[in-house]
Length: 240
Length: 373
Ligand SMILES: Nc1ncnc2c1ncn2[C@@H]1O[C@H](COP(=O)(O)OP(=O)(O)OP(=O)(O)O)[C@@H](O)[C@H]1O
Ligand SMILES: [Mg+2]
Image 1 (cartoon, each protein chain N blue to C red):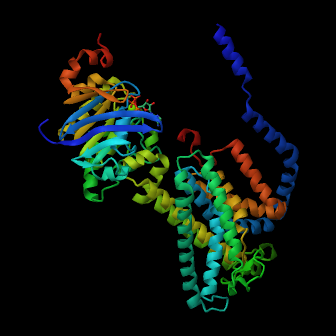
Image 2 (cartoon, rainbow over the protein chains, first blue to last red):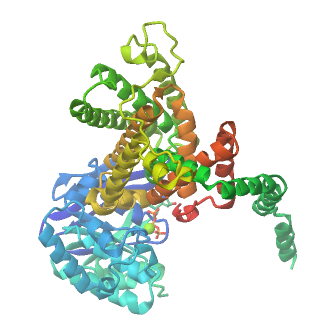
Image 3 (cartoon, rainbow over the protein chains, first blue to last red):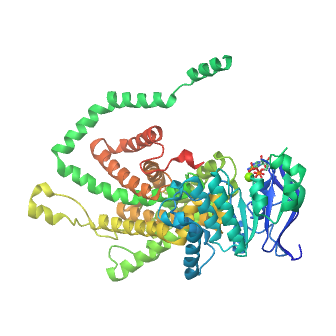
């Protein structure tokens, strides 16, 4: 990439107690890019995103946001700096209304008028949410909850959006829709780091990709090249 | 085939403890409690005046129990810890307010023009003090244990509770006019709280108009306890439901990590829950001190038991539930005092706690606790 990375991980090691989950992960995400991180179950994809968001502190290595280290910054401060995440399993607030869920996404902001505008923008992306503003989050369907989780992250005006398996558990039509929305969000200038099991779709929207295996990056390339890579085809695309 | 057989055998061996407990409770209820309960019911119906009197007492009790119960529920909702020291925070609130009453030399002779503002000032200062105390307890006794096995913070809470009880005991030794005493006077003895609110019966005129059947008792004190409690409860509820910070508190209670991903400072939100719970307990301490006219270092135990039961009855973690539970436990205690006997009231409240835990652990308004994990 020619432009300086917005987000960079340098040799990051993250542990859960004694479990060494990330073993020296390095990656970069350039401004305006969609970068995907693919890998099988337990490879460390979610751990990578949780480390970037500051929910986990790496024991070694650096996480840089626009050149500044954020690996020891508390999670809520990282959000203030424009890194928003839609976590694995949606994690919406089940007993808050849809609207309040979205407003929680804008927690760090105080520009009331613009928050209202952004609400409308999210309803524009996800018209279903608009019909359900007063409903409790926990009563939404799985697909609607996924939309809410992405919409909620959008409410924080992300500079970098981290998406952890946004297509998980969705019907094929909805998967298609979610990926279209990811494209649309990116076209608004938002940088995206996308974690997916659905490698085919992910490589379809991404500019570049990384392959993670048991806590290590084993491959990185342009999305097209990765999709054509024999090892990737075998392991993640189900092509023999 | 073979594995199927093993499977079904295994299923047969599962003992349905819960069902057994339920059946046992029902049998116990019918055999031992039905007759006395029927007896009580007859008494209630035949003497409605007495019943009404007790219900009025129960209302006042319920108001302060609800205040304390909220502290249990706010904290449990957000850190899933039963703050066993909470009853003690309430007791310290009572001592603190009585100390201020002494420092300001308030008595039943102070003119109202200065008495009322000073009492409000004392209320605010007491709430501030217990709020800070409760937050300090979280900071020093619970925060480090947040990711430890659940038993650890629970034991820490019981430890804090003992420490605070002894602080109350030492406080009683102070050479202080409000404690009617000089150094060496009996620390264990209740300290008397001056009669700052008149004890006149507001319902006395009813008897004059409607006759003896309406000889009810509801004093200015009752009114003050209920009005102050209701104001605080409504204020808290509005805060938690309507404000951004209040919503962030509910969000943190529902999903701590997701809240951090929204930019919510989880530690600060937890501190806020302890501050709010502590403030309400302090208010209750002052109100009850004034209402009963005494303060004693053991005050926290009974109040803690009743309020905790109230929180569980309403559904621990549920704010409206704590208010409803407080009211119900207040009413039930007052009825038990009259129709069973005061010595048995704690047992009755404990019994209710056991019954809820067995039959409906989520309480009256509680969400499914199991699903939360
Ligand atoms: N809270 C935890 N405590 C202990 N170990 C954990 C914890 N979370 C994850 N791990 C371990 O860390 C490793 C990486 O997990 P991670 O959740 O990052 O995988 P993932 O690539 O996101 O997998 P998936 O595709 O299934 O979501 C796994 O071996 C997992 O067992
Ligand atoms: Mg994952």
